[in-house]
Length: 249
Image (cartoon, rainbow, N blue to C red; front, side, top):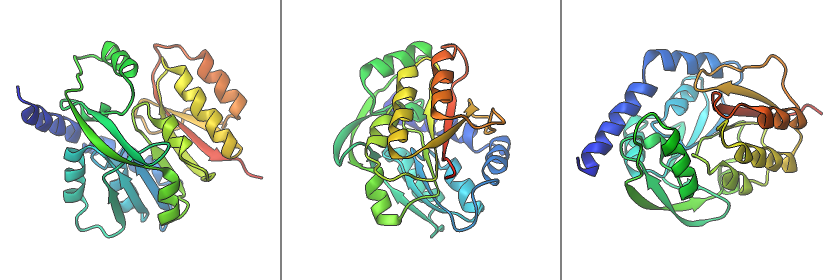
């Protein structure tokens, strides 16, 4: 099977997963409690724009960043009549430049700039034979560059397949609220992200398992508590997203 055909199958798979009514309802219920009209949101690793679409419906202004050319083409068509969203076909990293994006045609959601060790780990833990079958040399910008251009966002969703830490190294501003993906079997990556955030400000943390889009704990945790939670997490337990909000002064 050729790359182009596999890529279109991968796109169809992503659209079936992320554009289904149940997923859309979960996203809307989850975000409506804190995304207000006029908010500025950064969708870093926008994929097919599921979060971006939800935020637009809630009245937010959106900056969506997606380096995968096929996904970016889809985003341009999806949001072509939406002036409240600005699209960037770059990757986010520690500093401007160029880096190789490893594209998985059949599973575009795991396309990544992470190293071979991470890709091997994901392959070995996947339920099917995920492969990264093409490279794309992506332009890299930083979160701080986006802030300098658009202003401090009210929320950042960071989902860049093990490139969250380099992305956070390119951030010099404490933002009010953000999330980043975590893997229970890759504790060091989550720990580094939390330590990085704490150099920018004092944050409180919560967790959403898998893609359920609901906070798992009634009480938000301190940095010390979330670091302990990460360290004690069963490597075979659900992964998901860690949410961080600036602690009230």
